[in-house]
Image 1: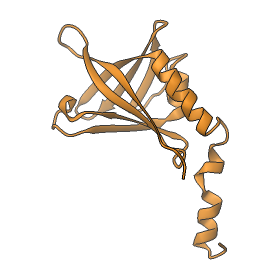
Image 2 (image 1 turned 135 degrees about the vertical axis):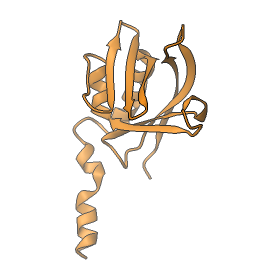
Image 3 (image 1 turned 45 degrees about the horizontal axis):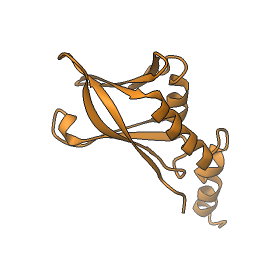
Length: 137
């Protein structure tokens, strides 16, 4: 069984009101889904009072530490030497959060220790799934 990597992070919700608001969040990585990272937010920050989960490419998070990355629902960019900004775009609007870059680097290092960059296809299990589908397993 592959280990699941969870890392609690403190993010600052950047809102239209003065000052950022600290919010707990969790970054998730699961080797069974080696290309994706998930970020979970507590219900109290959502518009409808339910927990919020976003899934995006691990590579996007990694690239966004160095240069602005992403054109879709999730965008990541550096914000000075110590902070990383993430934008989450939805029909209801845009949420922006700021994280400590060291937290993101630590999380990514743990994920790359579990599944090295470039080795993701070996963890996808496509060959095994196809063999089971066609009765060769």
